[in-house]
Image 1 (tube, rainbow, N blue to C red):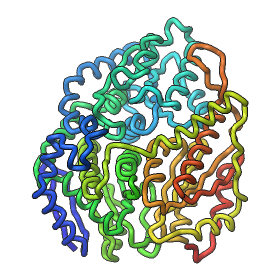
Image 2 (cartoon, rainbow, N blue to C red):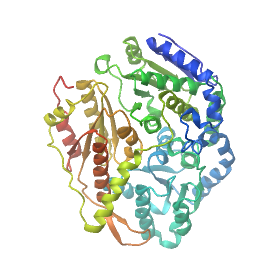
Image 3 (tube, helix red, strand yellow):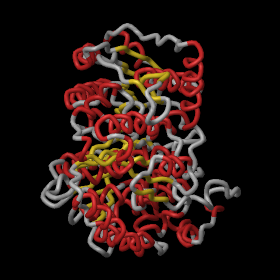
Image 4 (cartoon, rainbow, N blue to C red):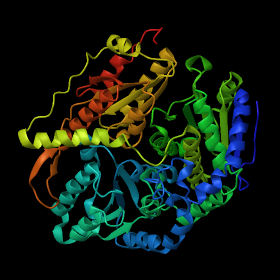
Length: 558
């Protein structure tokens, strides 16, 4: 095994154990240097990835955003202080994908700090999720963050209309706007909406940053400062990594080459093993890698939330990546055993949670470099719109005649599931797509199911709540080599919630349940049209109990 240490001079220890793959990685690193790839990336040279500059020359603002955002720190701190002085206690971020994942990392990693706002993130259109959050809020002391790069995200605007009407019910229209701020691109429809409804503030982000690369911009830092993160320290951490990543032997370049070359060699399932305190970072990096690399029949599948097991439950398609905080490395022995069995392992030791600033930039650059090695363009998402368009068309049709296409579930039995899984090809993976209300009990039931599936099939497993995953891994699902097996789970809402046609008005045409159903159908149709294998189970109102019915699998699958 080969180990390379101290790729980052500022304290993050990176250890690589890649065994027989070292020679091909060394050759790729030589190419990286001879072709001046890192220097060309910093020079905004789109030919690193493709001859056409479309969606590249205007997508590289993340390279220096950490340094530029330092000037915004006083404004961010002033916002947080004014809200605290006025008695605000809660903040709710309404957003999807790149707008929601970094804020969730900050809240889950840094926790609730005394004197700062608590933050909840809503990225589920399940009516139960909307109602559950609604019931927990003291609307007189709650700030809503409407976060969308395009300003047109259907889910985000639906959330806004619901909660704006709820605030008007409690406080009246005269003061409702004070409880909303916007984060969006300059000139987006959300800018006009914020002006119309007299939002407290609007933050216009650098438009040259894609959503999944926006953690260190306003999209991440506004929520971060509200929950008490020291954003100056976070940015300093990112800037230190930025400086390290300008040379040919940069940590980001090295990591990107490893990701790309191992994927080309068949190790295209990157399995993240994270300390508990930074576990949510996995959800952020999942979107970054999946949406950036899953296209043109290629892709790297990020696997997060899957505890390590013995070598017997894995195929030969894994790369393990460990990110650990001091004193929190419970899986070190397991990872060493996997490495001894022939699986490549990367290990990184973080000093504290503020090293996430470095990690954000490190993985952004590494993903861009991996795209170069794979021969794909890492900044677009050509297949993401497919499911959105199909769902949108279904909503339009519903508005006309009041009917959605029928959802046709399979028989809820492990035998049916086993038959479906028998279709697995070499290098396949299993994606569980749960269009249900997120909860702790459902999290555990889904974890139990995925571990059982891994045990019986030796395939990589992923779990995503819908429609959240559509803005995260949906691009890879439809753009990669097509080996995924997709298990869709739906449920019946006990209560429904209407979506106002216009904020501040009572009229409505559709409900959140209708929106969610259209998203299930749209995603299913997009997967089938892309030649993917899909099965759908309706869990009814008994979600965890019916997941258990699928969790009785026999030996010998696949």
